[in-house]
Length: 282
Image (cartoon, rainbow, N blue to C red; front, side, top):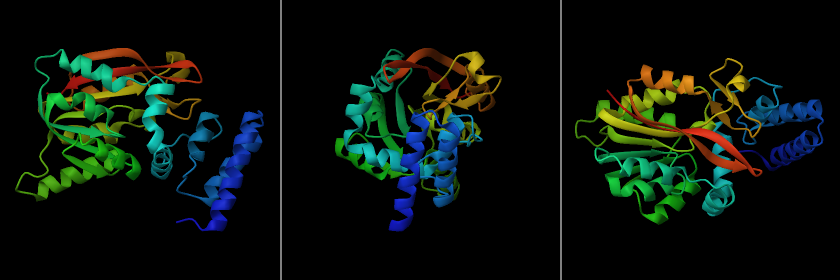
């Protein structure tokens, strides 16, 4: 826990960094973001991501857990209004349309990674007999709990949850930690750069013939400059289609029934391009 003095210093440095960045003073902003990291190595402000977005720092493999948890805790009560109203987010609804049209897409057990307030649980619940939701933000899980669309809810980071679930299954003979038939990750990948841990965890916790459905933001091919992923100017992570397809193939999700270009959301009135993917485990 940060002391009050540390928090005041962090808040002051971060606000000055934002002002400098908006004014175009990139070097001053970068110095202040680095000060934020010195004050708070857990990076609740996401300073490392902002430095990467400015091309003035190395990109972290994912957004810091403390930053993501803080961000969503702060917005939990108004999250749906912001996401679906102001930002035009409709990925769970689009995914539900794709799966509902497939007669084979009926599932005993669903895992919703980054479940948020439960939008995917609401839209996909009719296709599943049992639904488990996971989110790093305790306040988001509280909101999801009020909707009563999940049979089980956990506060955890997605990859860590998958690792713990696999370990628990290895030690449990009663089947309480059984694999899933559908794993959903809508608006999760934009907070991760390197996807190997996520895909490995999903593969380890998905039954043969099971489905992995997810969304990802993307950019023009030349913007990646040969890299598989990059931090965007909006401080989120974008992934190339080539990288996503490599991850699917390497982790046993070779039957791909949807790889659709979509508008993930809008940002300052501009559409953010992305992918909506549905793939099945060998």
